[in-house]
Length: 263
Picture (tube, rainbow, N blue to C red):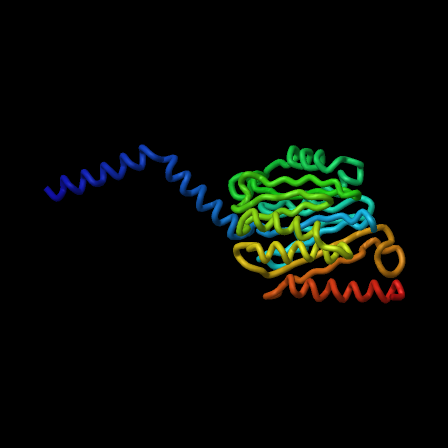
């Protein structure tokens, strides 16, 4: 009797394995995807791009719970524009976006062309459907894309001369607060971008917390010294309070600008 039961159990196990090979394959694929994401965590973050029509400066700022986020997110060139690349990120979107803007391509077309030309080399573990990026030209026109597979909550909002975008956020209030803060803040572009980050954090920010922040602003000959188009390039790579540290640096930069202008 025990032998018949044992044989029956073995037959059931064999039939189950034969009946559902796809289930085993699906499980293996899920494990591979999880391993891929663990090795290369998404650039879960919130960022803002902005333009100041009075000065002609264009730039962006970012905060995330990853180390040295500025190295993979922000790209800018004077008289060309600025790009933010994040989420299931392909960092080549940054240089690609700048090159297309340099050729005179409109931001919306830049977004469409980059997505269309993405070969999606890791569709199982690093899908192009999770990419998020924003493109702003040198006069503040902007287009933003949030892929349907970007980690929730993911989305963006576009305002006047500003876009805010993020993923793994507390919710849509984050990007809404960022745009409203940018539009309602006066003063240098650096303080407006900073206000957007601060507002995004108050609204919940990155659900995982904070670690790094960065900012870049460009304008032809807008920087100190000779032939310098970089008005500001700041990075806080690892800090318990990266936005507060970024504010400290922005304020020092503002004091320097005032000294250069003889105020």
